[in-house]
Length: 97
Image (cartoon, rainbow, N blue to C red; front, side):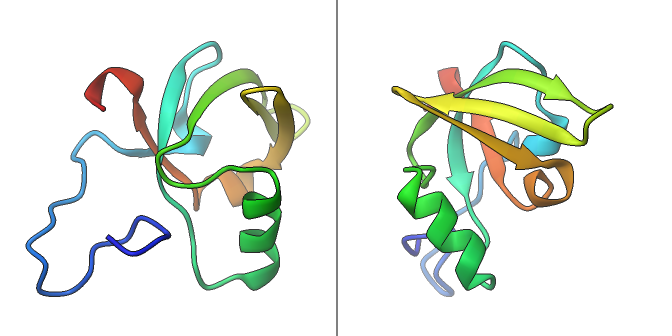
């Protein structure tokens, strides 16, 4: 894959079948970041600064759809992501790694 988790054409890589958008994740679950969008430079910088990159384990701390945000943590870092953005961040269950 490329550094963002997307398959490189011709590599034969098959994306994880159980990967889901972060917006569909349940509160309290642990996931591994599978892929992140590479077409939005500001968002990508935000993810890199907060160490939310492919291969990183994250915990869904809170799903607050009434506020339009998901709160996730990774190591000692907690970040808030809007549902529209979480639709573009793909994760897979931790046990599949």
